[in-house]
Image 1: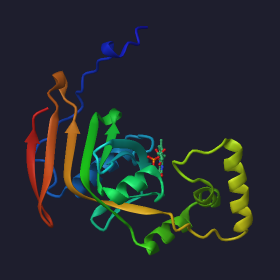
Image 2: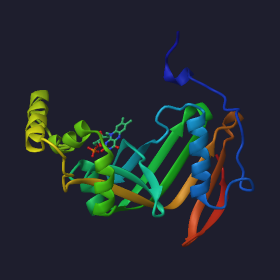
Image 3: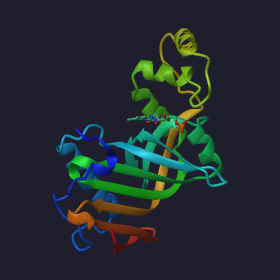
Length: 213
Ligand SMILES: Cc1cc2nc3c(=O)[nH]c(=O)nc-3n(C[C@H](O)[C@H](O)[C@H](O)COP(=O)(O)O)c2cc1C
């Protein structure tokens, strides 16, 4: 079998997308596609690439899990002192990307990021399994550590410190990306894909355009 990436080729044939048939509100369009992704049995359709950048323009990218769409934005949870947290503190512009190959779909979302309220982070933290709650205390996310044993030791310390309820660490919580730009991409035959872009022109008003593939 030839596994060279230059020979991997696939035609996208499933369906189409156009500016007349999409929802006027990109959040509704997103919800519609997300439901279809769940129905198609895609594993973790809420996994999304999150791109951030330093003020100097060096981008970095990682996968996080979408935990809600509310307050006009997309919410995820993380360590505020992590690399992404550090970058967002100095540069709140960020981008999300969903890729669902089984549906031949990609969604790009761009906007500004803000921290969710402490009450919102507390409420979400309380729903996490105890081990994940302790993990938030144990892991100095994105920092260099000695070895796995250091993590295990930190986890034991956290478990001793919180024998019952685990309090949310102040450095762990949610971010909400408030979009000003969406793009929905549907793969089509011969690489002539359908792309529909939404640009925010007023609080609840979006300009919709087709983009060349
Ligand atoms: C499927 C998947 C889901 C993930 N979900 C999260 C998440 O919700 N929050 C998080 O902080 N890291 C999550 N991660 C780990 C991140 O990709 C990343 O390793 C971590 O956040 C550190 O990133 P940073 O050093 O750029 O801050 C996930 C990774 C994968 C592969």
